Length: 406
Image: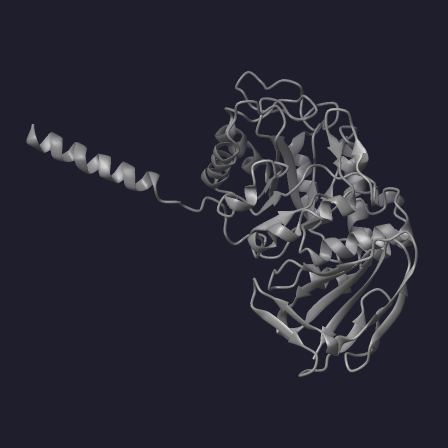
């Protein structure tokens, strides 16, 4: 009897210890820089099928997107049948994917890309297809058998569900399935995932959904679609939570979906400054030369993909002009001048009059002590040094992005 009591006491201590220890569930080696890819939702919603998507995969490669660093090809909502099979497994819609999802994943891999898929933490997806609630381990094993490399996990139909519990369970299921997958928490920032998701996934949405709008939000009745600038304004206060392997996600790119060229250019620049995941959402087959020049700008992409993984901060804001600063590796720094006003404005910036400090990352840039060369990342030209004032007129809703090198 005494032995049983001792064993029970020891077991209770071990269980209590385990309950209070936080174990990382995710595959730590993934997404050391922000993931780059393409997602089907922004352009096609649920109107997807195998021929269309195979053509998109081919264009992904031939357009130069792959060469620019984009890696993931992600199917969003609408890929599955409306019901699970008799064994409870998800089934790819046989009309949309007559050869099955494994064959499509193999096609994506054959082009040198990685394959991503979508589901939801709730009982149904946002478009009404079967959700994962209660099927976490079964679904994770199925994705692993198909060769999935990236899972976007949404937050619709989740009444009564605890966000941290739901996403932790799915993270554990991915780990148990044994195949490394980037885990994207699409929880919309409702439960502050930046505070608890570092060990759960590689990225987490920090806001609600984006739409094709630069300045103003758009009411959808029961919810509000957010503009580029509205999302930007929500990032500065959470920058300290981002870094290699754990990223704030301000949502997918709307570049090429209907905004003006300068707005697209500013949108892409700001996302790169934010060290954001770069998930294109345009129709790659109809991409204009201007859109391509934005999405494949390797100078900007190198800012986004910098190994330090530091998110930019808003250093200055006055009369519609903002200065965003992103510390980079090798003592370099990226500086973005954003004109949010409705008219052109001329910048005359005295570098020597300012010491730029990042208190979170303990980095200082003293332009009296050091001189930096300036490279304009859109014109791709060297434009002088910090020894002289930087003067340039910036159109409305546009940016100038400079890389400063000692």
